[in-house]
Amino acid sequence: MRKALLLSVPSLSLAVLLGACAGMSTESMPKSLHLLDANSDPDYGVLLACEGKDSDSTVQCETVREVFARWSQARHVNVQRTDVDATPFKSGRAALVPDTAMHRYTIAIDFEPIVIPSYNSWSGTAGTMTSGFVPGRVGYNAEVYVVSADTGTQLDKFSLHDQENMPQHADVTPTMKTEIYKVIARIDPGYSP
View 1 (cartoon, rainbow, N blue to C red):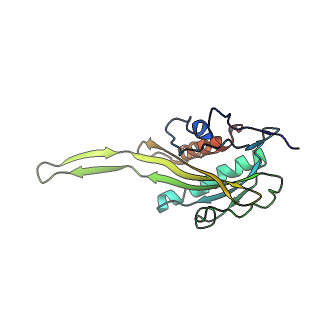
View 2: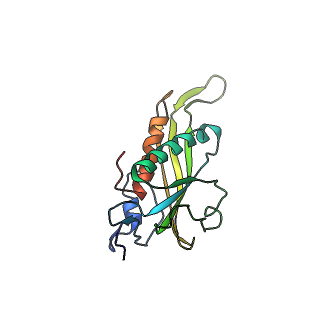
View 3: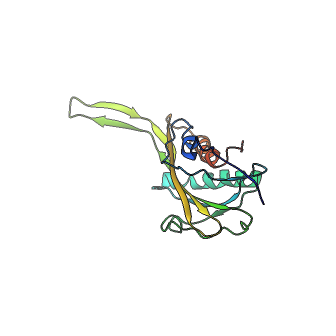
């Protein structure tokens, strides 16, 4: 019989642990899941979908894939790219990730990068014009689905999101990487980049 470590204890739900990161919100996730094996290694494969609402955001999907690939290599997690129109994002069921027969779960992540450029705003009428600077923002919305690797049945779903203000003309990629690592830390607290 294979032993597994609990990611949460009965008195602390996974949602409480996931919500511990400042600025991050989660939906309720009452189940205690055995997401780590006896060696504290992830006991799941990952389906990763990424798409922004505009081109400024979508270009950061390459950053998302790069960070997940580094984590995948370091923690020996099979991460497969998929489309946001694929299951489980639309149906609540997931196709099984290849090479996960030894794992209990598939974690499907629908990651939406957010990049909002800064701008100067103008308001008023002739003779009373005012201007102001609106800082840019970088962040993400992520829907995370926990699915049984045996049956494809959705066991849980939760939402994560965060945004940071950015100075004008700043490189958004380092901040985006930090945001992506926050998501990875929620599903794999044993990982340190």
